[in-house]
Image (cartoon, rainbow, N blue to C red; front, side, top):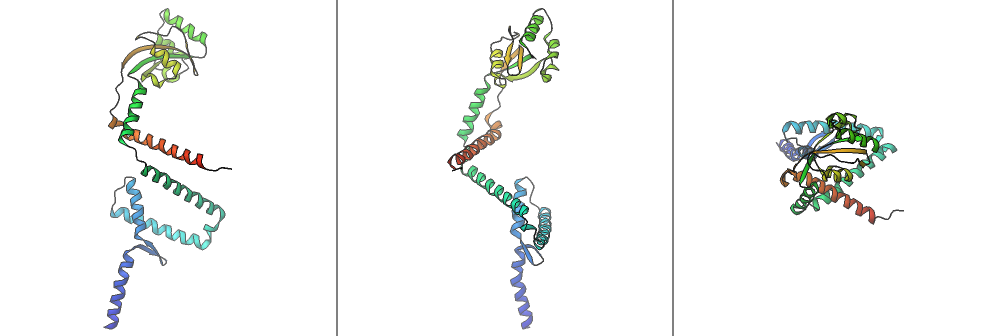
Length: 255
């Protein structure tokens, strides 16, 4: 009876210990908390927590432990190139943790989102333009095209010789876009045109010489702030992170 009681007591003590482990491989325990950590990572990526997922993770951890034990027997981890790779991985994980900690402690506010939304909206301007252009190498070529257009040539036909292949196949059309989409000389020339009007002189940009025609103008239909909130927040987070990185670099003593 005494022996039975001792065995029962031993099993009672051992039960919680085994409950804390997902598995034991060659005498080395894999704690259940490690499974929980993997589950959290995968749930963040969109996978639902489930018994099947936990079993897959447990099986993966068992395989890893088997392979690690074999690697230890062979001294793989002591190889210089492996140690260098481990150190690089450690640095990456720690630095990512630093950046995540900074972002968590410097959250994006509603006021910042609204200010950025207003800035972007203002930069877009109140109008967008439906324009066509023909891009050529030289000013003389552009002047010749303007002369042909004034004599009655169709813009869409002459656009086929444009250096801009994207618009050349569509009669020179650039589709609807705000003037901020274009480089300044092009945007300035476009903004000076009336609907249906063409540039009287070639317009030079870093891409070449343009002949531009304005087909139509309409008010910009700008999405509401809530629709753009995710993109704005991510952009602001990246800006904050770049500023943080730059400040650390500036304070560092580099020799």
